[in-house]
Length: 459
Image (cartoon, rainbow, N blue to C red):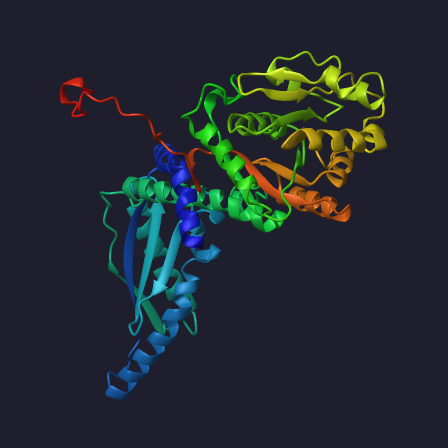
């Protein structure tokens, strides 16, 4: 399951995975173009002991001595004393970085390589290094100034002028650049996904909220301009709200809720639009539904439905009007709407008052379902006060915005006041990305060709 999740994550950001190798290729080309060429010249030297007697035993001793010396000479070859003789005014430390020496195993041979931006300069400096090193060994291996040296170094292979540079290597650089860019993109996506605690799947929402998922509302481009499902009977979004309506009928056979609070963790998660569309879907099914705007701080139901919201719930709660005077009818389904009215200075006290409980009791007697659009749970306590007086609470969670800890906190808040969380809705889910797939078809009536109509004519 984990592998499948990451496969879907890579598919979701396929454009980034395609773009990253192109960026890596461009970066590799820039680096290659700005890297000066480097040429390497190589020389080989033989370390041999001076055999005065010419006997077999002395020859073996001389061979052993030369093999013992060769390891020390490999380190001595790159010393500042030797390189200083061929520096020609160049910094010895920089020149040391361009020279490497190693002893060939099981032999008395030394190999030295010199790198330079000029091929002729690399070969010339390598030959000079061999000559300077041989001269220095000839001096330090003499027991006395007039005696012959016990060990000598002979230049075996002189340096040849290299034809091709060893760096930069365009093909290797381009391959590495593309690979590193791709791995960086994949690693960045996985890290970003791991650090992102927003709710993106129904499974995560169900686990965090500890309740059932009653609906997944897919995102549509024109949802902001046309938030209501009127006139969109065949769209996937309309089908999502009809599915939500059906699922609400099965949440409690013995305890079917008649008053439902629709809320969210934070603002701008789509709770008001969900409330309105759920009420419309229920009214279309023949339910006697009333939609109450219980958000007395930022009322929006009247604006969604195009109604006058100057008078409404607040007037009833302060005994300035009765319910029959402020309830309005909307649309062809005959949906009843109770606007919020004027914004009061004490919304929490009004929503938790005895008058509010009386209003809810009257509405539940007159209608099959009372849907209340409540403020968000976490910023204010209004929704909690309503949830304690209603039969159930529906939590709306926005895909990719609401965090898991916020959902958990909302569930704990409802549980602390013994409010019944009947389920959750994942809103703004991608239509064809990740774990959610919108239906690209609808059940439409088939127009039959009159020429092929086989229905018998009435007699």
